[in-house]
Image 1 (cartoon, rainbow, N blue to C red):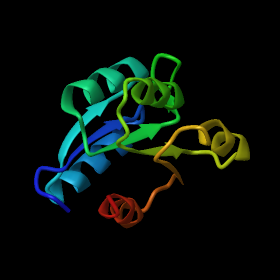
Image 2 (cartoon, rainbow, N blue to C red):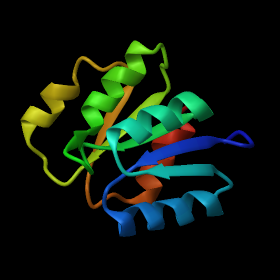
Image 3 (cartoon, rainbow, N blue to C red):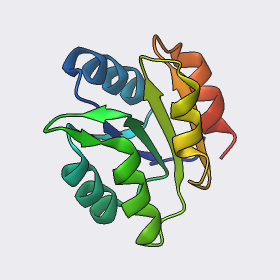
Length: 120
């Protein structure tokens, strides 16, 4: 893992976001957390992170999928890891057109997430 690895976490479940932030910071990541689609897009554009962790459903009836589409439209090709509490096949279909994206079903093992990020 390179030094100063930056990650943006867009997550509406505050406890999950807090735990992920603490775990990532222990590993030396710079972490930025947000709770909705608009803030996710703004933070990605501002920080140019090395990876983005997006919950499928975010606050204010917003969507991690829509945030990802806006991020890609802006020319950002950073790895996106979608997280979701459901394993519906339709979720996988919805993200199939988004390049450089993975999906993990909650509950997420932190080591599994680290493995994905170490492949960058």
